[in-house]
Image (cartoon, rainbow, N blue to C red; front, side, top):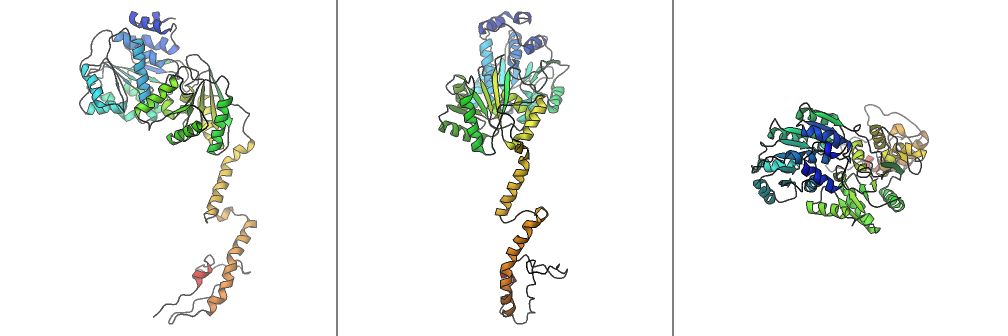
Length: 478
């Protein structure tokens, strides 16, 4: 089937032809007719399958009639991150070059004044992140009562970033009779609940099982040591030896690790840039632009770059850290192997990552191949080894292991070594001057190292664990 059979307008078809696309993807083929029929749509498809065009193309056709009013956008698109919002705006510029539509991008990190001026002129398409949108609404600069179409994109990412309460607030600001499009790559129970709240008799468009990975991606695992420097050595080796390497996105779990890894790679003469949530918007866009243009070979990123970013020719994805949430793995590796192209995703696995790796394989329903063979058998004993390491750390701090875990062989020498100085102090305790008016203090009894073992009486405190200087009597002046 071609795009001409989907009901799109001539202007949109002309723009599609100029962009070089001839055949729609499965989600585009099934979703576009439903959107043009004014039905609510629940779209579920793995990342990289063309979900953005599935709602941008019919929107352009529907917006050819009518005009926008000041501060009252006709359509609203919600995105979880600034990068995704900017990317959708680029799609409207690409496919809407034959339309005279006002498109406004409302995201953080940009001046309120510039955004207010755009809203005042009237907006046909408003693309926004939830936080900045609510800021404009609370300041009285934006009215959503004229919104005809609401699109919630990357809904599962909205859930991960804690935007669901904001989405619910926005849902109360738009008309009840609006049309709603809901797109997601995974479908956890929380997202199903939100979909049931926002959608009315939706057309469900599901082109793949939720949380599946593209068949064009070669997935591999590589074992590494426990220490961070070992992981960095492994990453550098993999980058240098990768087949058909063009560029790569390297994912870390924390922003701090992104900065540390960037400095390490730059010291080893790798051309790398960073992208994470603590960077200001101009720096984030500059880093992403350098990577897209090929000026940087490596993009070191947190999960802010894991969802929906459309960088067509990423040859490799490296998971420097195994993601804590298995859904994030699906989105991360989806940055490669897009639009039918092949890609490679390599995950570096430390001994402590076995639990997270098992969760990923259960979610995707497949066993990931080890590149250099499975790790040694002693990897499975990592938790036990770690517990021994923690025990040694406590001993160095003076606390030691608990009594029930000590062996009989190691018990006696430790006690004898403690009792030796106490035996030398006993004669001094007996001959020391005793304070006037005070009863004589009993001398120290034979301890566990003195040959006789006895249990302390209930009316007598056990002082065997005290050092000798604490057992000396103290002279107090009357």
